[in-house]
Length: 356
Image (cartoon, rainbow, N blue to C red; front, side, top):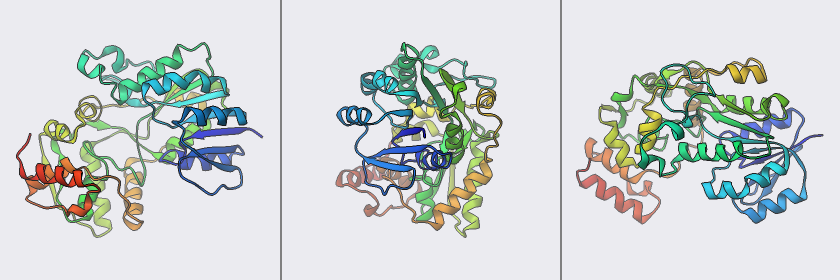
């Protein structure tokens, strides 16, 4: 019986992937810093996969046919462990990102140019921002004498706990919608095309690449159903909330660059969310066979509904962004929404002082 190790397998992609692999008959080991109850075919191993000593010990204690790596590393971390991971398994699956691609007028294929090689913004290249770092980590694998890797580039992935708008996550727009605060959407990005992929679909595709000889030494992107514009995404979100009898106040603004600077994600805005990206999935289908992706309207509506009806857990609320929004809307977010004294102070400053 074949054994798969999933590193960081308790997140958006990992949870459904672990279940799907177990259903396929694999024995699945999952690392997590938190304690989880193991099940038939699924064993949780408590420990920090960023800890090299923990990982070395783990890989010596068991032999894995496949390692699926969902961790987010710093570049030095990945340089330090890449060869160890490649040598510890028959197939190492590295999760990169479709954000590595440069702008293209046509459909993106796995051979399309990457930002790392084509971007002329030296300041950006020096940051090792997510897309640049992922491309450099891909290069480490490409340059290895071990070719037992598969590089996967998922497009923007959503699920019940991750619901993105161009400039923020659910901790921004959805938190505000559910707490009676004005929701801000950037109208200047309304016509930008995005390809959002339901998390369960990403994990289903990955599960078909696991232990697949055709995937060895290949780069494959996974990019959902038909692309949609950000304007269509806003409409889907608002209609989904209306079905739950939630009618948020919405303000559209046309200066997303300023807001992205306030939020501290100017490079994500400039090189990801403000660029139309449409993908060709031919290579994926040639390896795993045809599969049907969940449409954006169906998937996003389902996730909004499940979140609203569920526990409604939010991560950290962005103090600067909320201060900026609340100054524009002449509203106040209760200070208890912010987890630290520093965030409370930052919120107050950004709400009171005109910036941008």
